[in-house]
Length: 369
Image (cartoon, rainbow, N blue to C red; front, top):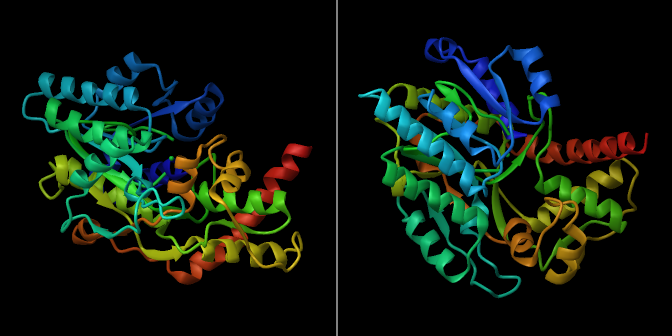
């Protein structure tokens, strides 16, 4: 969902640098490729995650790669970075950039299971986020975090500057190829909300999972006491940050952090999981699909069982707790210093619950037809 919005943001940019930059889009699925080609032109390439040869070849033709697809497929990120390393070798003087998307569950604490204490608030300038993640992964491997660390390490190994953007989501581009490596930045996105502007998926994952589970259960639910806190960002504000990163990368990337300091945050507001559950309960009641009942508190085991299908299709207790019940508070000092100015506030956040309820209901109606 974020990928489509990022692509729209780049294509509609008023910046001459982006307007003159050819954009190539790697996309999963032949049907999606046909629709993208009909809308945007012929620089669309259908791929699957394990098509590493094509991924490397396309990355090698670009100066900037933005990956907004799943953040836990290490082989494809490696393929991108190797392609960018080739780009650097064949174009002396070039500084290819990889902008990778990850998520704040990587720094989440697991207080529901008592597997880790209540988490701190992380600042992407003041704190050693990379060092914390390395230590956490040594204690408890987590696939998305493993991939993120591999991106940073490969960027250093291959001399490709990397930025990691924390978030959750599909496409690649030229100068852009929404996929890259070497000079690497990781955008660690929090909970994404709002209606996307791309051609395909319009809504994110976490809040719709709460909606779907509430509809199945007959009442809104939360795992544990619901006090764990995350941050959130509207998808269009997030897309605006990617535009800034892309422009900085095209300009040589001197203003961008990279390597072990290239993990940056994209947070705007803050919420608890209990607040999400109550927002879902109210929205479901307002549209008449659920009675006015208090939120039900679930054990981690029951929560994993009930959320598994609606959250990523399948999930274990580690994935569910980190993604739907942990604390992962962040401060986006880097993004703010680059000129990022989000414009969506709490009113948009609260309105988003109704949007997500209606989206889930619409999807269920369409499946029944």
